Amino acid sequence: MVAAGLSADVILAKIDISRCEFDTSTDSLKVLKAAKVPDSVILAMVKAPSNNKPAVQPEPTLRVAKVTCLSVKEVPLLPAPSDSHPIRQVTCGSDIAVLAEQDQWIKVRTLDGTKGFLSVIFVSKNVPVSQVVSDPSLHTSAPSNMIRAVAWRAVPWATTSYYQTPGSANTDCLGSGSWVGNIWQGSASCSTQYTPAQTVPVNWQHVTVFNLVETGNTRMVIACTRNWAFSKCTYLVPGNMFHFEMKNGKVEVFAHKGGSNKKETLTFDIMSNQLR
Image 1 (cartoon, rainbow, N blue to C red):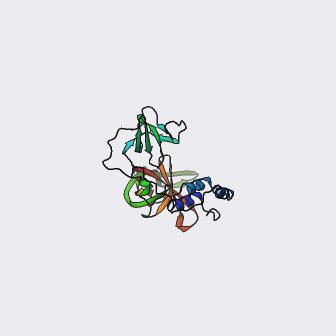
Image 2 (cartoon, rainbow, N blue to C red):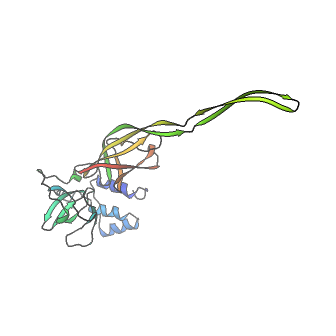
């Protein structure tokens, strides 16, 4: 697949949805590295479940909580309570799944599936869920780096804007006269017609497109606004899967236009999201 020019994202997606029997011996890993297989793919091969390995039991979700903060916007997510090097920063106010509680540390899973530890002071005291929920990544066909379109709806609305037309003035003159010797004698009468400036309304038709999508562990409503001429906003066909990235609080979805090799990127606002 690497030799065929397929990207690491495509190979990872294939590994995610397949039952694999990789040879991950030291010699084989050296061969893969020499063939310029990306480290992310090699790591996924090492971690992939095989037919001769026992199935990994899902880690249950005890409850759903929020990241709480007082004077900061983000808090560190640690790989272990004793580790001072964070995996990443977690945004305050975001939803998290509580997996285990250990004195002053709580093991959590974020909306994008990252697992780690937060100090107990940064986790809200929500009521435990009445039913233990399995790891949601085991109950969806969408790999971790892809979203699956479930449904969509377009809501039309109109915006009225105005522009100013300039005023005008037209002058007409009538008269008569004659020469007496070398002197001109005549009379004239002029009238002016004025057209005042006017404000003219223009209606622009807009449609907001809402898409219900699922990731490996999240269900989201993402939206964009389309007008008649200037927007690439569109709906995602239900049942299809798309590569995506989370950037600056938005979702960027990648596809290929009209079956061609030209890559298209669409940006959607996140209207709501929740752990599944």
